[in-house]
Amino acid sequence: MSHLITNQLLDSAWTYDAYREFLDNLLLEGKTTGSNQSEGMINYAQLNQKRMRKWDKIGKLSPELTDYLSKIDRPMTWLVITEGWCGDAAQNLPFFNKMAQVNPNINLRFILRDENLELMDQFLTNGGRSIPKLIALDESLSVLGSWGPRPEPMQKAFLENKVSQERSGKEFTEFLHLWYAKDRGRTLQNEFLAILDVWIQKQLSLPAQAG
Image: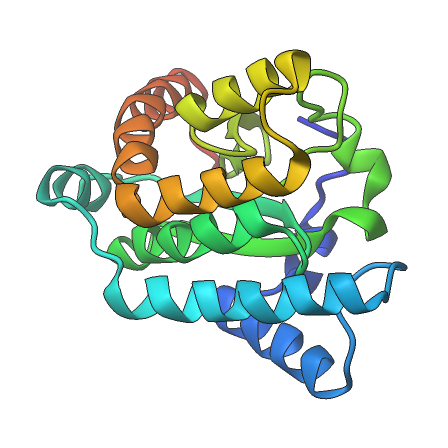
């Protein structure tokens, strides 16, 4: 258990709908999350809200994943560290929400990275504060595992491009979002089928919380 993940933190964290409303309200004020309020970051945030609205509307879960999710019979919390300007978050958060909606045992909550850096630093990716990061917790807030910041094929491509510099930052971003558009959440869902099995087996090995 991370000593930084408390019931108080979870109680103050956003639901998906509340998080989306928070981002929309910021954009109405010409703002996004975080300290960088440049025009570029605002534009990213606006584009990301459009991406999330798209996947909210057209994103679909596979029957296999839906069936697996429906069988989770012990409470589990998914705490997501994110920011409104993050493109990978916009592509994946709607699918987290669709998964959580399948089963009331899944409690999905959202917090901002830059307001929780000490916690973020316990879940680094190759030494970086990469988001989104989903942390799975059992009833006693023991960490079952984590996922993020992007599906494995794109994470691999990102790391390879970081070395090769084959694509510029702008070119890789375009490549990344084109991949998401074509993939339609399938790779993420396949990864969750595998990772959920690990989390559930770990959860079953821990004593159930009395209550």
